[in-house]
Length: 128
Length: 171
Image (cartoon, rainbow over all chains, first blue to last red; front, side):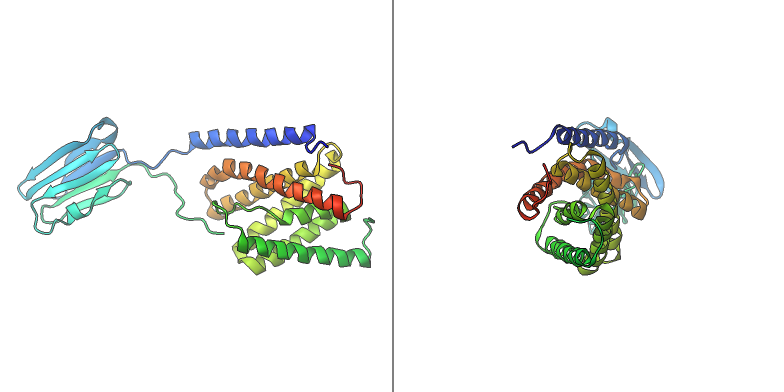
């Protein structure tokens, strides 16, 4: 007994093709929300600006200013404060930041490190 | 079986609404799928059988009523919007496919078409609700899922049709 007719197989192939096609279209049209630059400011003024696309291997940056010393590590996907000479070290405890808009702030040393990029529309959660 | 609406067929239709309700409830309680919205679509079995037994118009009515009451049982207003739209469009598409291509397309083919239309129409509702085209990125997965679930429910319908209805429902 034949279970599937010719037209059935055609329908299955068509739906598979449609799904592959839509996948390709989606993959091309939706870019991911990765940050593209790290902006370091000290005392509200721009200190340095790094393009993440140019950073291949992790880079250590020493921020030495009149307010204090900070050691920042920049990788191709984010930034992390390794050490600071401030008292509480909240910036070190902050850990690594990898998303657009995340920010590390060291208040005693007046240093802020922010990830910048263009945010595409993102859905938090879908419920049914 | 007669497609004319008489007291007997009204009774059987009511019976099918309640069978569909139970299936929908069981499905929402038992089946755990890795993806939100990915369901087996057990109620699709009832919809296809209804199309063959009572004709498309009655089957459409049955499935819309069933999903209306079923979403009151299993979810809320959002579920109702998804469920009723899905049931409506999948019934219409299966009705037309059956009308135009039935002997050439088997029950499994009709079932796959129904599952795919169900998923796509629900996705369009989601796009309208979230006013975001990015929900559409779910489409490829849902289409493949509808192939699987359509095949399973189509086979189940075939087995049911062969055993319960002594009619010329060919595969």
